[in-house]
Length: 77
Image (cartoon, rainbow, N blue to C red; front, side, top):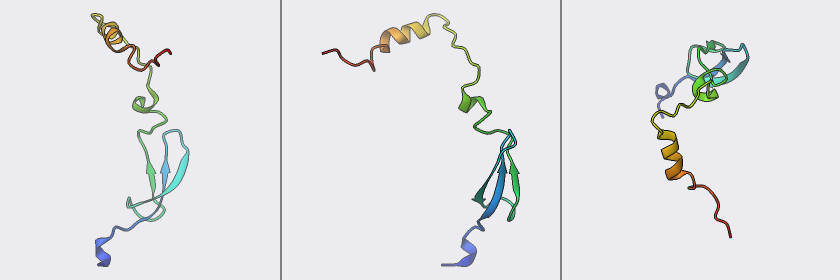
């Protein structure tokens, strides 16, 4: 195989938004570079669920629950 066809993997330090760090291999930057994240799984609402509240406008949630509410319930013997 050609040597120039492979990316240069090296160890970098990833810094999370709360200041914690970990080492991983990456093609980012150079050896021992630091990648500071602006968004991570500890703070972003996509992973944490945020402080969302479910609003039932026009009965949509209740209609959904009426239609699919018993879908995952076990059958009684």
